[in-house]
Image (tube, rainbow, N blue to C red; front, side, top):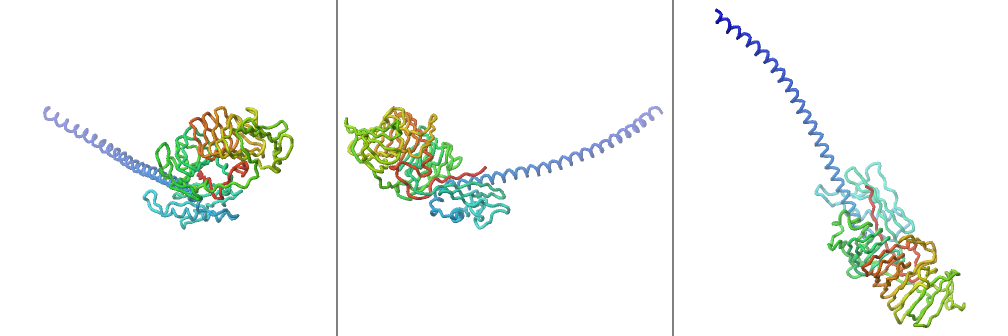
Length: 469
């Protein structure tokens, strides 16, 4: 009996323990099911969020790329836009409409394979047949003393960026450029330009510092209005404008603005008729007398003649005899090479408008500076309204003892052999391996210059594109 009862008791207890375990198994299974469902739901929500974030990032990148493309189009074609403009009128909307007509030629472009018609540059309220997005407007084009500032809007999807297209018009003096070259121009790290520079020939840059607009016409043969391909050699590699990185306007080797394809400048240079002193000389000595008058000594060998001139008015001999009434300040020299020196080293030497024009080479021996110009280190500021100097010759050589020149140097060959600062302009091709710093004379932007500085023909120039981030 005992043996038969015991197994039965054990079977009953086993059944109860197994049932209890089954209940817990079902509970645990339900809990795990809920957890799994929650995880799957959370994963779905996370997946949708990730897709949204990824999609938003892709859209932002696409819009950024389109903005960059539109900006590069403006920068690469800035010279072409200028050539398509008429002389400025009092109605700024006329120029804005002309700019818009040229920009609308880009409407059918498909920059990234996502469809044409998305490149929209607004200079007016409509671009590519489409009105500006609701609530947006463009400020009127501004004309001030022939300086144009044309606001524009770039559109990418629903996003916009604003910017300004700036240029100048007129028959400015050639010294409106800190450096202006008729020939091919190669600029290295030894050339530093505080102002604008332009080359009608092919431009090659390798590390120069240019704070303003560096433009090039790329003319194979210089003529008024000539403009070649919008290409430039950077570090020995020729690149088209659209290939320049990070942008055509500011490649990595440059500080200022790069504008390619501008109309030719030097073929249209002209010089007004001038009332000057014509003579032969081997030496010209410039100085400022204690009376504030200009002193000019002209020597041929050991024979010298002293002239005196106030800041404006007659040219007289030292005894007071009038040589040229109402003298313009022009000195025409011929027959032999000439050396130009200051009367007293390190003292001001120019106090009135002067231009030395020689048909033979000129050597500058010693610093030539304005009387009312203050300089700190290599930065100068002209405060006088009458002090201008220009020197024009087939070749200008600057001796090593010359530290600074105030004026406009006009020559196909401007040669220096020691660190030199020019406050004014170099009109020609600089040739030297030492440091050359050129700082523009801001008075040239107002049309002021020495009487012997040639003027440019009236046209649009110095295109500059700026886009807000």
